[in-house]
Length: 295
Length: 236
Image (cartoon, rainbow over all chains, first blue to last red; front, side, top):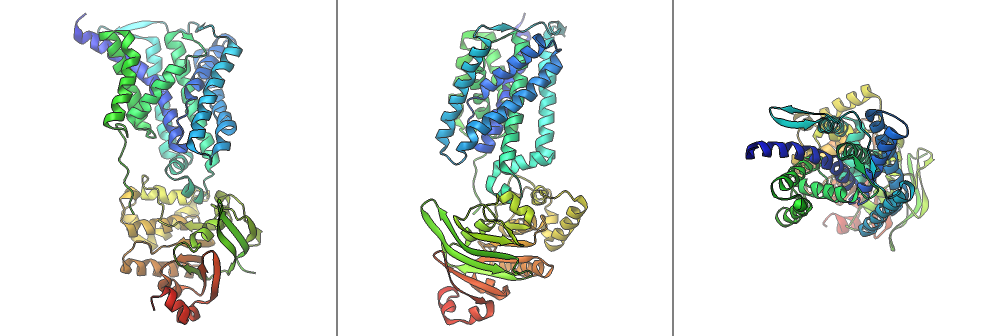
């Protein structure tokens, strides 16, 4: 196998991994955009989504797509409940209180997960996607096709919601200026709640896709992807939706290249080296603007 | 019965007592202005009417309904719309999207289309810049957009907070003549201004605010002629 061939193969792997980071990063960035919170529980929401998908397939005997949709819906509702119980009472509190609460929610979800489903990793059943085919000599498997397809559909749907619908406009207005949005008649509490629903359901989709891709899930599975999606969101420019997607893909590709050409032990190091680099060179991220206010 | 009746409200910012027992009324069809120096509590009063701040005590009646403590997004539905200080347009959205957000509470698409025409009639420059990002507009255009946006909710009472701020004198004149037109078309106006001269020239009645209290009130022309007012606010 020559170098070029391996490069393309790693790019395919990288983009599928990156799509998953992108889905998680979108939720991070949407939530940050609207309440300026780095929701450190977001990775654990993703874990819950993976388990709901798992139980949908194993216990309820659903096929993968209905299981995915149900997991997205239920996890979305969980996101709304978390916001209502943990974050909403702190709406006027200092931001650090909110951040500490998010870390608390993260631990709560991890250990509640261990209590209810045990710490033993579960193996995702065969979803009928364990086939692989080769295109011009490059191997693509069924799971990767599913990841690409679902990611593209969800991103198109999200773009439509954010750009074209009344809810999306309200979301953009509220994340730009919550107070003025209220003067337009926008109920900011409701918009924040819906943002948590959408962000959490995207994380759930990522969780189910990872379950399908890597076959194994456990209650602490959200920690590392959660942190990496955070890196992806910062890389793209936190609060900026296209930034989260591009950041996620770049991160996935770099990880795949590092794992493929150097050593997979450097994978995680590469991700966090990127974070340090971004913070040093362009803290506002790739898509970030230096905001200057018109007086 | 007055359209808006504020009765002895007290508003605090944390421990700071910003509004100390203000009462005022606005009748249907009027232009009423609230003038006073920087920090007198003019904006605080408007923000309390629109629901962004809650009075600790006192009542605010609008069309016979107590709206004190009602959330801001519901007060818009009651028929009060605010043009905030500093315009506060949604800079990263287009002119059209800003106007659409102004009509957020409405579901009568025919009426919204009609009002959009009305807004473009009043502010032709907005129509020329319809798909431009609002942040790229000039200061005067942004003020027009903020006013157009507020009109899109078809308010019964329009609250204007310092519409002259940062604008050239010629533009201020243009904005004020549009305020008169809006009022003539049937919208009641409560105007907060530091530019007392301009405000008194278009208002029918005025209140003078000093450190959280109303110190003078009455007919705008009488106030404009009064020696005290001329000294304090009109530059001699």
